[in-house]
Length: 317
Image 1 (cartoon, one colour):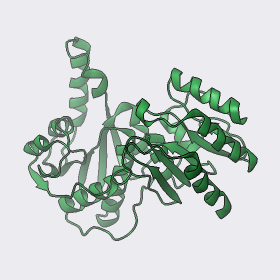
Image 2 (image 1 turned 60 degrees about the vertical axis):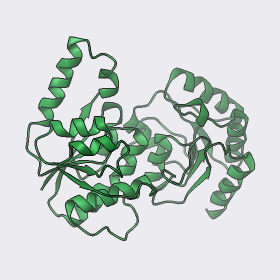
Image 3 (image 1 turned 45 degrees about the vertical axis):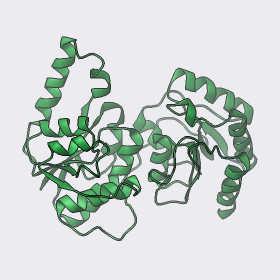
Image 4 (image 1 turned 180 degrees about the vertical axis):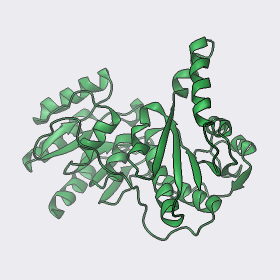
Protein backbone atom coordinates (compact mmCIF):
# COMPACT_ATOMS: atom_id res chain seq x y z
CA UNK A 1 0.00 0.00 0.00
CA UNK A 2 1.23 3.49 -0.86
CA UNK A 3 0.28 6.19 1.62
CA UNK A 4 0.85 9.94 1.57
CA UNK A 5 0.65 11.66 4.95
CA UNK A 6 -0.12 15.36 4.89
CA UNK A 7 1.03 17.10 8.06
CA UNK A 8 2.86 20.22 7.07
CA UNK A 9 3.31 22.27 10.26
CA UNK A 10 4.06 23.31 12.89
CA UNK A 11 7.03 21.40 14.31
CA UNK A 12 5.19 20.12 17.35
CA UNK A 13 2.21 19.06 15.21
CA UNK A 14 4.52 17.10 12.89
CA UNK A 15 6.06 15.35 15.90
CA UNK A 16 2.62 14.49 17.27
CA UNK A 17 1.63 12.80 13.99
CA UNK A 18 4.55 10.34 13.96
CA UNK A 19 2.93 7.62 16.14
CA UNK A 20 0.09 7.29 13.62
CA UNK A 21 2.62 6.14 11.03
CA UNK A 22 4.25 3.74 13.50
CA UNK A 23 0.82 2.18 14.17
CA UNK A 24 0.11 1.83 10.45
CA UNK A 25 3.47 0.23 9.71
CA UNK A 26 3.03 -2.28 12.51
CA UNK A 27 -0.45 -3.23 11.33
CA UNK A 28 0.04 -3.08 7.56
CA UNK A 29 3.27 -4.89 6.56
CA UNK A 30 4.81 -3.56 3.40
CA UNK A 31 3.27 -0.10 3.79
CA UNK A 32 5.14 2.57 1.81
CA UNK A 33 4.66 6.10 3.13
CA UNK A 34 5.65 9.54 1.89
CA UNK A 35 5.19 12.72 3.93
CA UNK A 36 4.25 16.24 2.79
CA UNK A 37 5.68 18.85 5.17
CA UNK A 38 6.87 22.44 5.37
CA UNK A 39 10.53 22.59 4.37
CA UNK A 40 11.90 23.83 7.75
CA UNK A 41 10.49 20.71 9.44
CA UNK A 42 11.42 18.17 6.75
CA UNK A 43 14.17 16.65 8.89
CA UNK A 44 11.62 15.33 11.41
CA UNK A 45 9.68 12.80 9.28
CA UNK A 46 13.02 11.93 7.66
CA UNK A 47 14.11 10.52 11.05
CA UNK A 48 11.28 7.96 10.94
CA UNK A 49 12.31 4.72 9.16
CA UNK A 50 8.79 4.34 7.78
CA UNK A 51 9.04 7.43 5.58
CA UNK A 52 10.29 6.63 2.11
CA UNK A 53 10.18 10.17 0.71
CA UNK A 54 9.81 13.56 2.34
CA UNK A 55 8.08 16.04 0.05
CA UNK A 56 8.88 19.58 1.21
CA UNK A 57 6.81 22.64 0.45
CA UNK A 58 7.30 26.28 1.45
CA UNK A 59 3.71 27.48 1.67
CA UNK A 60 4.46 29.76 4.63
CA UNK A 61 6.92 31.58 2.38
CA UNK A 62 4.91 31.34 -0.84
CA UNK A 63 1.61 32.68 0.52
CA UNK A 64 3.16 36.10 1.09
CA UNK A 65 4.58 36.26 -2.44
CA UNK A 66 1.75 35.00 -4.63
CA UNK A 67 2.17 37.81 -7.16
CA UNK A 68 5.69 36.70 -8.08
CA UNK A 69 6.39 34.41 -11.01
CA UNK A 70 9.07 32.46 -9.13
CA UNK A 71 6.51 31.60 -6.45
CA UNK A 72 4.19 29.94 -8.94
CA UNK A 73 7.14 28.18 -10.54
CA UNK A 74 8.05 26.72 -7.15
CA UNK A 75 4.41 25.74 -6.45
CA UNK A 76 4.19 24.02 -9.84
CA UNK A 77 7.38 22.07 -9.12
CA UNK A 78 6.04 20.95 -5.74
CA UNK A 79 2.75 19.87 -7.33
CA UNK A 80 4.60 17.93 -10.02
CA UNK A 81 6.60 16.10 -7.36
CA UNK A 82 3.37 15.24 -5.54
CA UNK A 83 1.96 13.72 -8.71
CA UNK A 84 4.93 11.54 -9.62
CA UNK A 85 3.10 8.46 -8.36
CA UNK A 86 -0.39 7.34 -7.45
CA UNK A 87 -1.27 6.78 -3.79
CA UNK A 88 -3.76 4.30 -2.43
CA UNK A 89 -4.63 6.88 0.21
CA UNK A 90 -3.77 10.52 0.87
CA UNK A 91 -4.31 11.09 4.60
CA UNK A 92 -4.64 14.67 5.82
CA UNK A 93 -3.79 14.58 9.53
CA UNK A 94 -3.93 18.37 9.81
CA UNK A 95 -7.55 19.21 9.14
CA UNK A 96 -7.01 22.68 7.71
CA UNK A 97 -8.20 24.09 4.39
CA UNK A 98 -4.59 24.63 3.27
CA UNK A 99 -3.61 21.04 4.08
CA UNK A 100 -6.74 19.68 2.39
CA UNK A 101 -6.02 21.68 -0.77
CA UNK A 102 -2.44 20.42 -0.87
CA UNK A 103 -3.68 16.87 -0.30
CA UNK A 104 -5.94 17.26 -3.34
CA UNK A 105 -2.89 17.99 -5.51
CA UNK A 106 -1.73 14.39 -5.10
CA UNK A 107 -3.10 11.50 -7.16
CA UNK A 108 -5.26 9.31 -4.94
CA UNK A 109 -8.33 9.40 -2.71
CA UNK A 110 -8.09 11.98 0.05
CA UNK A 111 -9.23 11.20 3.59
CA UNK A 112 -9.45 13.33 6.70
CA UNK A 113 -11.58 14.52 9.59
CA UNK A 114 -15.34 14.97 9.51
CA UNK A 115 -16.45 18.59 9.66
CA UNK A 116 -17.18 18.46 13.39
CA UNK A 117 -13.71 17.05 14.07
CA UNK A 118 -11.51 19.16 11.81
CA UNK A 119 -9.74 22.27 13.10
CA UNK A 120 -11.30 24.06 10.12
CA UNK A 121 -14.66 22.40 9.32
CA UNK A 122 -14.56 23.55 5.68
CA UNK A 123 -11.54 21.28 5.11
CA UNK A 124 -13.80 18.21 5.23
CA UNK A 125 -15.48 19.31 1.99
CA UNK A 126 -12.31 18.36 0.11
CA UNK A 127 -12.13 14.77 1.40
CA UNK A 128 -13.48 11.68 -0.35
CA UNK A 129 -13.88 9.97 3.04
CA UNK A 130 -14.23 11.39 6.54
CA UNK A 131 -13.98 10.11 10.09
CA UNK A 132 -15.19 11.54 13.36
CA UNK A 133 -12.58 11.95 16.09
CA UNK A 134 -13.28 13.74 19.36
CA UNK A 135 -11.70 17.18 19.52
CA UNK A 136 -10.94 17.01 23.26
CA UNK A 137 -8.27 14.33 22.84
CA UNK A 138 -4.51 14.90 22.84
CA UNK A 139 -3.14 15.66 19.36
CA UNK A 140 -1.21 12.38 19.29
CA UNK A 141 -4.35 10.41 20.06
CA UNK A 142 -6.38 12.27 17.41
CA UNK A 143 -3.85 11.45 14.71
CA UNK A 144 -3.67 7.79 15.76
CA UNK A 145 -7.45 7.44 15.73
CA UNK A 146 -7.86 9.13 12.36
CA UNK A 147 -5.24 6.87 10.75
CA UNK A 148 -6.81 3.74 12.25
CA UNK A 149 -10.27 4.74 11.03
CA UNK A 150 -9.19 5.35 7.44
CA UNK A 151 -6.67 2.52 7.15
CA UNK A 152 -9.05 -0.03 8.66
CA UNK A 153 -7.31 -1.37 11.74
CA UNK A 154 -8.14 -1.37 15.43
CA UNK A 155 -6.47 1.39 17.43
CA UNK A 156 -3.50 -0.21 19.22
CA UNK A 157 -3.62 -0.19 23.01
CA UNK A 158 0.14 0.36 23.15
CA UNK A 159 1.69 3.74 24.11
CA UNK A 160 2.57 6.09 21.24
CA UNK A 161 5.66 5.02 19.33
CA UNK A 162 7.29 8.04 17.70
CA UNK A 163 9.71 5.80 15.81
CA UNK A 164 12.49 8.38 15.62
CA UNK A 165 16.06 7.32 14.94
CA UNK A 166 18.30 9.98 16.46
CA UNK A 167 20.98 11.43 14.17
CA UNK A 168 24.46 12.43 15.25
CA UNK A 169 24.68 15.69 17.16
CA UNK A 170 25.43 18.65 14.91
CA UNK A 171 27.72 20.19 17.51
CA UNK A 172 30.42 18.85 19.90
CA UNK A 173 28.31 18.73 23.05
CA UNK A 174 29.68 18.76 26.62
CA UNK A 175 30.24 15.35 28.18
CA UNK A 176 27.33 15.75 30.62
CA UNK A 177 24.68 18.26 29.73
CA UNK A 178 21.02 19.20 30.01
CA UNK A 179 19.07 21.33 27.56
CA UNK A 180 17.14 24.53 28.24
CA UNK A 181 14.67 25.82 25.62
CA UNK A 182 13.65 29.33 26.76
CA UNK A 183 12.51 30.71 23.41
CA UNK A 184 9.13 30.53 21.70
CA UNK A 185 7.34 31.98 18.70
CA UNK A 186 5.11 34.25 20.79
CA UNK A 187 5.96 36.50 23.71
CA UNK A 188 2.96 35.16 25.63
CA UNK A 189 4.68 31.79 25.86
CA UNK A 190 7.86 33.10 27.50
CA UNK A 191 8.94 32.32 31.06
CA UNK A 192 10.95 34.87 33.13
CA UNK A 193 14.66 34.95 32.38
CA UNK A 194 15.70 34.85 36.06
CA UNK A 195 13.85 31.56 36.50
CA UNK A 196 15.74 30.01 33.61
CA UNK A 197 19.01 31.05 35.20
CA UNK A 198 17.93 29.45 38.49
CA UNK A 199 17.12 26.18 36.69
CA UNK A 200 20.48 26.33 34.92
CA UNK A 201 22.33 26.85 38.19
CA UNK A 202 20.60 23.83 39.71
CA UNK A 203 21.65 21.68 36.77
CA UNK A 204 25.19 23.02 36.99
CA UNK A 205 25.23 22.12 40.66
CA UNK A 206 24.33 18.54 39.77
CA UNK A 207 27.23 18.27 37.34
CA UNK A 208 25.38 18.97 34.09
CA UNK A 209 26.30 21.80 31.75
CA UNK A 210 23.19 23.77 30.77
CA UNK A 211 23.00 23.99 26.96
CA UNK A 212 20.67 26.81 25.93
CA UNK A 213 19.09 26.48 22.50
CA UNK A 214 18.02 29.23 20.10
CA UNK A 215 16.84 29.72 16.52
CA UNK A 216 16.86 33.44 15.66
CA UNK A 217 19.21 36.34 16.36
CA UNK A 218 16.95 37.70 19.11
CA UNK A 219 16.68 34.25 20.65
CA UNK A 220 20.45 33.89 20.56
CA UNK A 221 20.81 37.07 22.61
CA UNK A 222 18.48 35.71 25.29
CA UNK A 223 20.19 32.31 25.23
CA UNK A 224 23.59 33.92 25.75
CA UNK A 225 22.34 35.96 28.73
CA UNK A 226 20.87 32.87 30.37
CA UNK A 227 23.99 30.82 29.70
CA UNK A 228 26.18 33.55 31.14
CA UNK A 229 24.06 33.56 34.29
CA UNK A 230 24.43 29.82 34.94
CA UNK A 231 27.81 28.98 33.40
CA UNK A 232 26.15 27.24 30.49
CA UNK A 233 26.93 26.92 26.80
CA UNK A 234 25.19 28.17 23.66
CA UNK A 235 25.63 26.17 20.44
CA UNK A 236 25.95 27.83 17.05
CA UNK A 237 22.93 27.90 14.76
CA UNK A 238 21.80 24.32 14.19
CA UNK A 239 19.39 22.94 11.63
CA UNK A 240 16.46 20.88 12.86
CA UNK A 241 18.18 17.55 12.23
CA UNK A 242 21.34 18.70 13.98
CA UNK A 243 19.29 19.97 16.91
CA UNK A 244 17.61 16.57 17.17
CA UNK A 245 21.04 15.01 17.69
CA UNK A 246 21.73 17.39 20.57
CA UNK A 247 18.34 16.77 22.16
CA UNK A 248 18.65 12.99 21.88
CA UNK A 249 21.71 12.86 24.15
CA UNK A 250 20.68 15.36 26.82
CA UNK A 251 20.41 14.23 30.44
CA UNK A 252 17.10 16.06 30.61
CA UNK A 253 15.24 18.88 28.86
CA UNK A 254 13.38 21.84 30.33
CA UNK A 255 11.58 23.83 27.66
CA UNK A 256 8.64 25.98 26.74
CA UNK A 257 5.69 24.71 24.71
CA UNK A 258 7.67 24.64 21.45
CA UNK A 259 8.47 22.17 18.73
CA UNK A 260 11.94 21.35 20.03
CA UNK A 261 10.59 20.51 23.48
CA UNK A 262 8.10 18.11 21.92
CA UNK A 263 10.83 16.67 19.71
CA UNK A 264 13.09 16.05 22.71
CA UNK A 265 10.30 14.20 24.51
CA UNK A 266 9.56 12.14 21.39
CA UNK A 267 13.24 11.14 21.33
CA UNK A 268 12.77 9.62 24.77
CA UNK A 269 14.53 12.21 26.91
CA UNK A 270 13.18 13.20 30.34
CA UNK A 271 11.34 16.42 29.54
CA UNK A 272 9.57 19.14 31.50
CA UNK A 273 7.28 21.34 29.41
CA UNK A 274 6.47 24.85 30.66
CA UNK A 275 3.10 26.18 29.49
CA UNK A 276 2.31 29.88 29.91
CA UNK A 277 -0.29 30.50 27.19
CA UNK A 278 -1.81 27.15 26.29
CA UNK A 279 -3.55 24.31 28.08
CA UNK A 280 -1.31 21.22 28.00
CA UNK A 281 -4.23 18.80 27.91
CA UNK A 282 -4.57 18.85 24.13
CA UNK A 283 -0.87 19.16 23.31
CA UNK A 284 1.06 18.34 26.46
CA UNK A 285 4.58 16.97 26.37
CA UNK A 286 4.50 13.25 25.62
CA UNK A 287 7.08 10.62 24.85
CA UNK A 288 8.50 7.27 25.94
CA UNK A 289 10.62 8.77 28.72
CA UNK A 290 9.60 10.58 31.91
CA UNK A 291 7.64 13.71 30.92
CA UNK A 292 5.69 16.41 32.74
CA UNK A 293 3.73 19.49 31.71
CA UNK A 294 3.16 22.38 34.08
CA UNK A 295 1.17 25.61 33.77
CA UNK A 296 -1.62 26.55 31.39
CA UNK A 297 -3.31 29.44 29.64
CA UNK A 298 -2.88 32.44 31.92
CA UNK A 299 -1.20 30.23 34.53
CA UNK A 300 2.52 30.99 34.41
CA UNK A 301 4.23 28.28 36.47
CA UNK A 302 6.07 29.36 39.57
CA UNK A 303 9.80 28.67 39.73
CA UNK A 304 9.21 26.34 42.66
CA UNK A 305 6.83 24.18 40.59
CA UNK A 306 9.34 23.63 37.82
CA UNK A 307 12.19 23.17 40.27
CA UNK A 308 10.23 20.47 42.13
CA UNK A 309 9.75 18.53 38.88
CA UNK A 310 13.43 18.90 38.08
CA UNK A 311 14.46 17.74 41.57
CA UNK A 312 12.28 14.65 41.21
CA UNK A 313 13.88 13.83 37.87
CA UNK A 314 17.42 14.34 39.14
CA UNK A 315 16.69 12.21 42.19
CA UNK A 316 15.33 9.38 40.01
CA UNK A 317 18.80 8.88 38.51
